[in-house]
Amino acid sequence: MAFPNIRRSWWKRFLIFLAILGPGIITGSVDNDAGGITTYSVAGALYGYKLIWTLIPAFIVLIVIQEMNARMGIVTGKGLADLIRENAGVKVTFFIFVGLLIADIGNTTTEFAGVAGSMEIFGISKYLSVPLAALMVWFLVVKGNYTIAERIFLIFSVSLLVYIVSALLGKPHWSEIGQSIIRPKVEMSTQSIALVIGVIGTTIAPWMQFYMQSAVIEKGLKIKDYSYVLLDIVIGCIATVVVAFFIIIACASTLHEKGIVIQEAKDAAMALEPLAGKLAQSLFAFGLFIASIFSATILPIATAFYVCEAFGFEAGIDKKWKEAPEFYFLYTLIIVLAVIIILMPNAPLIGITIWSQILNGMLLPVVLICMMLLVNNKKIMGEHVNKRLGNVIGWGAVVVLIALSLMLLVMPLFS
Image 1 (tube, helix red, strand yellow):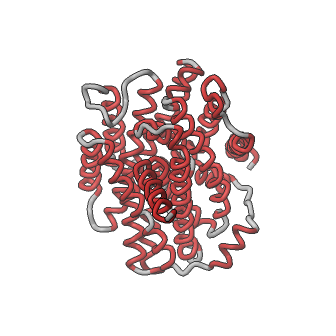
Image 2 (cartoon, helix red, strand yellow; image 1 turned 60 degrees about the vertical axis):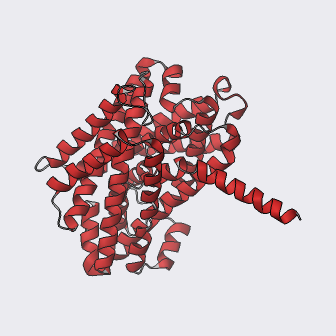
Image 3 (tube, rainbow, N blue to C red; image 1 turned 90 degrees about the horizontal axis):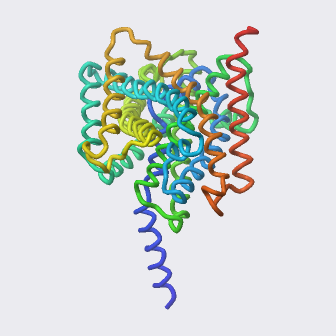
């Protein structure tokens, strides 16, 4: 007679998980944006399978960091920007967020570059696709609500799995992939270090930390929901790394083997057709479009949210324009600036794309240091401060990223 009770209990837990589902998976999936796809594509085309190993430490750090964000949001009920301002002061907050705002305008520009590039493969001009995409994401946020937006974002997340099919069509060499993971080889050059920072910076983007914490707060999650939130985070991180893994494989098994050099994700999609077929090209382009639209919606939201939160303005897509005018004005301004840059003739889109990801990687230690200090503060977190393993991984990531950033800056002086 115990079986019906067990079954009911299982279904109850499953329904609770479905209700909580969202922040972790969306935050993880939006990480595979146009900038990320470009960075992974360039890494695969230039170095083949050699940089796949970077996804393993990035995956571990990503889970640890996202868990910290969720825990801080649940325990404090405050966003990361709010906590930084309260504990670091307005001046420090101002300089941190100016750098993040500049990086995120570049990141948003990259998303619309992804829209333009993917639609050009299907024969649609950027002068039509970009303004229409901008209007679509603007209306979704300004005229929609959080529940509707979240469901659409979850559908977008699932759509990114097309990259698995695209990679398999390229007939990858699994033994070489295994060797690159088991016995990684690190090339000490400015280009490879820049790409490693770019891969880490796009896998664990600074703005994601602010979005994750705000998403937990928007859903009103409590400490009793923690186990479900953690599962959501793990699934989201796995999805992030799986998609990144197959994008690198798709380009490594085709473009790298033929010595084809690419500069953006659109180039990768176009080059795939003669090597892996029209379907592989179409799937790669479709994935790029979905990822770009997805991130062009989320990224400006996250940026507007943490900037407004840092300086004490009302923020959140659950509010009307008149309730949070600064939030919606900044959200709109970021989109408009990105669209203007994309539509400018001869805009340096490749430079904006790659360097925005590198800037993400260089700014990430600043955000992580703030997070580590906050999550270990007993006045803020009480009994929910970090355990030793979380601190080792968190501070270790800070040290490694600072070291890589310094190497990137110093190595050209000795070349």
